[in-house]
Image (tube, rainbow, N blue to C red; front, side, top):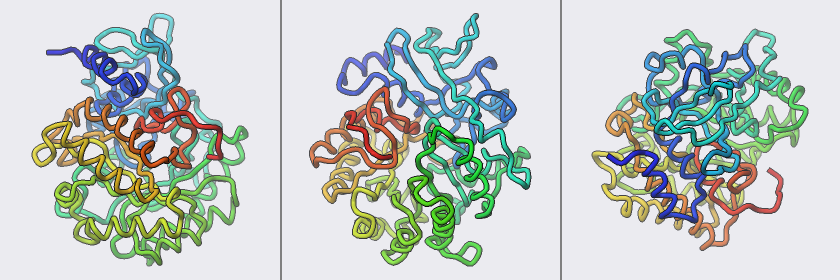
Length: 439
């Protein structure tokens, strides 16, 4: 069997235009990383920012299966630099997999490194505990629970509704563990607020604003599960919009406001805009019609693929095409038993979707699929999609953007290898650096 090192080096050689940093990053995102006890955090009482589980588990095992990493959380993210591949600074979201060939451990001098097949391949940096995490809300809740930051502090991630109203096998997206993640944290006795109070969110943001003196936090994302009827008497646009309105009134212009929600009718989308949201993420999840119907049964039932796409295009009339950035889950195209069986087919399908949206000036982005074991697709595909798929997707993504003359989307920080902070895929690492721009 080919070693993982040999596989990675072969792909670097075959796809020289994809940054080598992105090859390692995608492999870590798709397959996870193990942590030696020497590399775990001391949770919220230590000097390292711990993993917050901000919406999904993004792990290859349930909490009871993670061993010590379930008791002493790993870092939220890691930074790779140097080593035999001379890696430029690369921010990677942590996805724990105790059986991964990648391992983070400290050497005899206490310096953290990333090891692959037993060989040290890079130095590892961990995020320092931000000062704002050291302060509690007046009700005793932690800032990390209410308003965690990711992307090396760039993004405040506000999951204000921790579960999804698409519920059960006939409605839940087949790759999504938002509902299980809620259940496992509650079962473990961890604080994990189901619906976050607006005043709690504002208080947490006040603490962040007070102590983030370097203004590292530049954007916030409002998100949570889909709302198919009402939540606290409000529909989806008004529920999430209420938070945006409050944030923009209390902190005008402090952060770029983003919302991840369903593809909603035009009047609902206008409400988001009126509430002060600047960027709208109506995620389309997977392009292929058959796979969308199979993998997103709730979205197909309540909205339907064609209507979903129409609403995405309509929303560009309200926000401007550049500020509509739908996500897809890269890799589920190849999930057995229903997905594409060759990388060529999967890339062709996904590129068709990219061309469809980019031809309208809309730039999708993607999250690298983590096959969480409590989901149907994760259970059936514990290895995820082939690494080659992810590398070729980066190549196709950049080429399609160039074909339509588009630049990196706003609200994601800088583009380019060694500069990007977006941590759950390498799309920003793989784009050409651009002149400094706001956000």
